[in-house]
Every structure is written in C-alpha cells, then in structure tokens.
Amino acid sequence: MALSISVRETTVVVLGGRLDTSTSPEAEAALAPILAASPKHVVFDLAALEFISSAGLRVLLGARKALGDAGSDCVVVNMQPQIARVLEVIKSLPGMKIFATAREADEYFAALQRRVIEGD
Image (tube, rainbow, N blue to C red):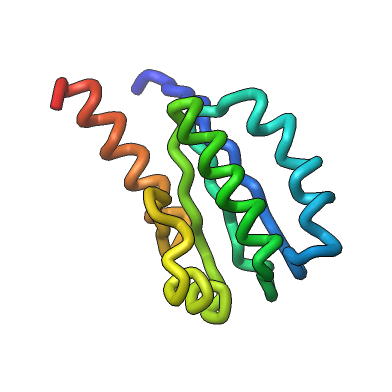
C-alpha cells in the first residue's frame, strides 16, 4: 500500500470565553494576520465561547466579509446553545455555513473538493 500524506489548507480559529466590547479588539488583532493570509478555508470553533455581544458579532461578521472578499470559505462549528440562539435570532451570519462539529465541516470540505475535481 502506498503512503498518502495530505496537508489541509484549513485554518482553525478557536474562540473561548467572552467575545464582547473588552475582548473584541484583541480578537480582531489576533485575526488580522490570518485574514491577511487569505486561507482557503477557515473554521471558527466556538465550543469554548460562552458569551457574544454585538461587538463580538462585529468581529465575526468582519472576518466573514474579509474572507468572502478573498474567495475563502468560512464556517462555524461547535456552538454553545446560547451562542447558536443569538445567531439564530438575529440571523447575523448569512452566507456562513454552520456545522454541529468539526467532522461535519471536514466532510463538507471533502465533498466540495471532490465536486471540483469531478468537474461539478
């Protein structure tokens, strides 16, 4: 059997704690080099995110816009119920795919790449 090694072009951003007025500048600063690199796929893992304010929503929306402008995919996984409810109520992430787990996101990216390879 031949050895196959694959390197994903996916960047995972793990957000934890509170994303609010006091922490959003830190989040924006941490995201700046990631967004500047224009990765093909970015996964925001929100499993440890306990709270999000309007300032935090602005961070996610800004990241989504920057990534979309660069032709990158942007997904959210592992949301806590309270975060999912906020996003559901305000419908703040149009155009951003949301998955229950990182595995679901990986399956999505794999299917997406298969479709490109197969010419769909």
